[in-house]
Image (cartoon, rainbow, N blue to C red; front, side, top):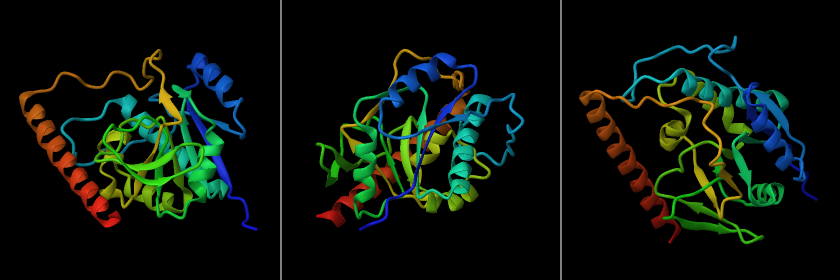
Length: 242
């Protein structure tokens, strides 16, 4: 009989967002797993330490975006310290739509070679990689879904991921869209067991909106080549599965 896998479930929550924690707790406590609250990094935290490097993006990060990235890195380190096999990271603006543990158990049982699977809303254009029970599919998408509301990741790849992101220049959701730079294989679940609440304002803060002409041109260039690389990779993976 196969030994059960050790899964650590972490909910990232800013201490001041007690209403979000209350809503998330009421949902997660109805699920069949034990979870822990992870105190999110904020610009006022002692662990708000960011070493800026030469930017690969079209603008500087806001303090909120940096804090969000650092919070996920904090979750990755905790998972390594816990000696778990898998880490499920959830953000406190989630809406749970399906039995999360059943979905996660199914994902772990597959013999697919994956590093991360996103658990929230996926792109409309997708291809089925593997059908699961409970009417869920593991799917591949032309570009990785934006946001980091919920995902499962193998702890075995976290040490390398922490090392490769020690000096980051993009928000974490944008970083993961360039998964090939991180040596990650990322899939999604459809239909998504999690969606993002529409009622909560982001605790990251407002992203920079006023860009110079030069920054706008850099943004267009970055988005074009990133999307092109992602779509080419998607087509190559589809051809291999045919």
